[in-house]
Image (tube, rainbow over all chains, first blue to last red; front, top):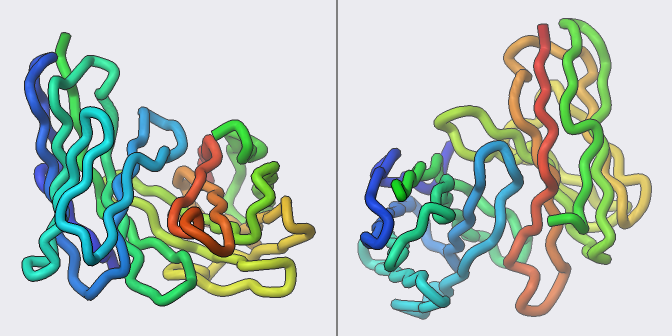
Length: 112
Length: 115
């Protein structure tokens, strides 16, 4: 069973626009992470937000977390063609196992 | 991440064959994981290992086995491959303690086709 569900499944925008992806999860978590996957490649960690944090920034990335709604969003500002990839949220809901449960991902296409 | 390597990168096999996918890492991490990725389903955990003597089943371990030969090596075997095991397989690692224990580092993946 998947912990995270992401919305939308696919997103197409023009270069320079902002992209927002959402993730919902079912159980309590220790932290939530976002990963990026270029086509057919391995996932790359982008950002982690802890359960006691509400917002976090890293460069053009902004992540929010609402534990009352069990949801998170990833905002990519001023998108570039190189941002074209799939983005996955992953939740850690165990005490110290490091196990992550991934959502099914949002495929982002940024048109030049 | 070049510190996590997987071999082979692509493999075609036939139903009933036993195959092994290998993963090596130079990150010095204790924890290693095997996932499979199917279109539209994200990643699902097959097995994970916290050290050489600690191996645990994940969400979808049936039909798979693993071996942790050393801290740096974690192999996944398909005992008798079947077509619905056709997928993209990823190995990942993470640290045992400290802030880095929450982040996983992925290999480039092995694309497996079972005919």
